[in-house]
Length: 372
Image (cartoon, rainbow, N blue to C red; front, side):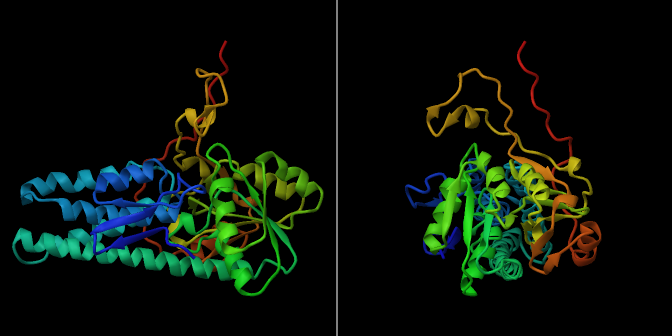
């Protein structure tokens, strides 16, 4: 298994596996500033809800390490640092969860006795420790999720997955792909269908590459092929990751997840979600409260650098959709499988979670009206 993110103490940089270069090149980026971390998250050089939470945590440390001003200047710098990282991507709750932890850690250190220089040095030390702890916790949670989900995958079955919820999307091991890793470790034989996942092709570029690296048998399909495979009886289960799950069990995940859930329900196929505790947002109930990120229209008008539509064609490009709880068979988590009624299961098993300080909710975007 490869590393997605790590701190290099010798070079004093955070190293990230550049996911925009896969599968053709495997390149580790070296980030020395909080701005470089923010850009890596926003540009999706690192992506996946758990992974960007870890990256943001290290971004706080880099910002503190690079700060050289007075205590008065710090009072302006500190909220600006947090806002810089919060503003990178609005949907994944793990980002805000990690920043909350770093905010509390740093502010506690700054309240200790001593000069500002000494307190800032302590804050830097504890920020790095907390970021490393978040990374290690994520790895442990993903392994537990994998074991949980593998219990539902029977020997000889074929499952479908969408987007990338593997080691690349986390600190390592993965959530949805962690289920396949764990099943392989248990000696099970199975196959995986991989949606290519338009418009940025995270399925074909990332998930297909990961599964090949792990020696897991997989077949790539276009997104619009899933229904025909289900109708032919060639898919026995669907498992996806999540970027945010509400208290009632609404699941925000990569655009295209919701129609897969509808298709699975129609064909009587189990539809599973794999996510760590850090992905649950108990401050929200309904899916309409989740902020849905809208991305650059050129992601749809192009495939890579090649234009595939008229240059001025209007585009609707939400990065995520929301799947209602009644379409979810179970959620694989690090504290076990949550089954319907999901709202009750989430409130019981996730009751100890801290509240999330994410962006203010707004309605999900609507497609633009066709040009007259």
